Amino acid sequence: MRATVTQIGNSTGLILPKEAVARLKVKKGDSVFLTETPDGYAVTTYDPEFEAQMESARQGMGRYRNALKELAK
Image (tube, rainbow, N blue to C red; front, side, top):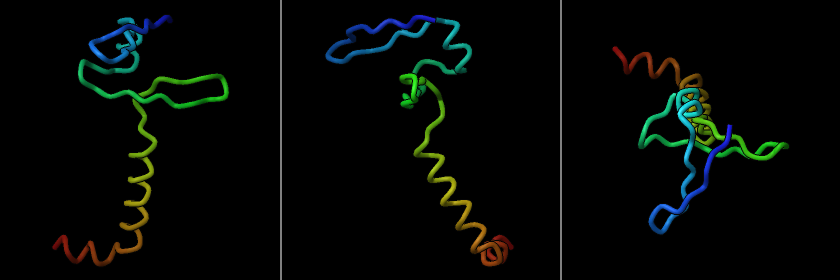
């Protein structure tokens, strides 16, 4: 698929074709992320920073499982 880089006001934007938008399951206003790969960049909805935050939360929930269970009562 081909995407087009264009000027949008004072910014530069990437215009995605309908097929790419459908496959990414995004809509106007959603965020996408560029991830550097050995072959270049990949456009994805996956947020590596959010995943790192969730992993920290999982570890904390595991460590304090009993306390969280008591607080949920």
